[in-house]
Length: 419
Ligand SMILES: *[C@@H]1O[C@H](CO)[C@@H](O)[C@H](O)[C@H]1NC(C)=O
Ligand SMILES: *[C@@H]1O[C@H](CO)[C@@H](O)[C@H](O)[C@H]1NC(C)=O
Ligand SMILES: [Cu+2]
Image (cartoon, rainbow, N blue to C red):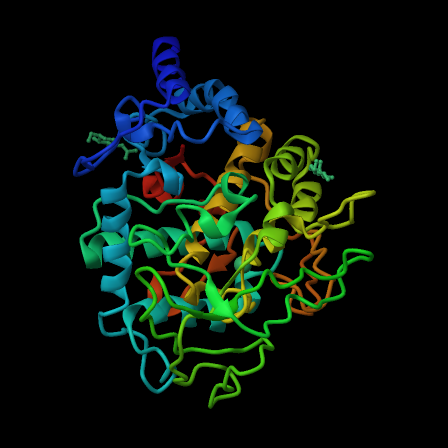
């Protein structure tokens, strides 16, 4: 074990970056598939991740073969976008475009606006929004949600890699010119055109009570998603010039371009120091959950939105900044991937005591914010033994408590690691 750890850390530190080809089924941290792009120095959370690996290994060793066969050696590797070679990025993009071209499976009578398979996932997020975002579910249900999306990319569109994530900190200074959003054909699309997008004029704690527009908000005109058709919603976004959905529930067909405000102000609230302190300074699940949502505001915090909101509004506007339809921007999955990574890192600081914990304080109170939606969440600490996560027509219902373990959850179906 110690030898393995040595090799892992060394290759990560040296950043022996994969370069070209993607092996058909990358499974081992001991191969080049687990490396980072040396152009980006490790941030404090990357370093924490490396320092946490011995704990992960000890935890895995203890559980080896008991309930499933997931090991660090056969785990899938979800990498940071910049850690994929350009060809690998293009392979991912091709798979998303494929999902955006396949016919939907959601029932036409219930979701007339789901025009493509990709939209089925958006519709699931919209119709299950309440359940997906209750405090009991937010972490685990989104973990499952990303997993089934990744599965669809692989099984329905032949993608051979895994869902990448976006390490906000790498791009926080200049997200518009990052590999995520620079508009090149290996990016997730460019910024939206200049528009009168007003930013997020919500009642954030003063004096930083709004996330200002970063100058975009109009149609994305560069990169692989410039011709993308967004159909569902909007539902909670108020952006002038976006036609209302023909249905009150937002599930009607409302074809329009992908709008986006790639927002560096929002990104500043999701820098590595925020992530690091959220992980390290919150010992119990409810404190961690509240910090993740930016509550209560830290003294003197200039970007007090919490990781979840700050990450979401990096892709503000329609649909990325819409509580219900946010997954209609394909960058959504990168953001929630990062959040999943952060939850895992929090769990792994003390796996014995943290892996099975579920947030239950329900401190979702700021109205109108993403993940808050003006709803009063009232989950109390309760018996969750039989609680179920239902993702409608995108996946079978599963037990909530089976989703907590990233390396081995769902009877071993979950078996992946972030690098
Ligand atoms: C692990 O894999 C072995 C060999 O394929 C199999 O016999 C065993 O049932 C598996 N164990 C679990 C818990 O899935
Ligand atoms: C993170 O760093 C920024 C810039 O130095 C600072 O303004 C902010 O308060 C820090 N946040 C946390 C949570 O430490
Ligand atoms: Cu969300």
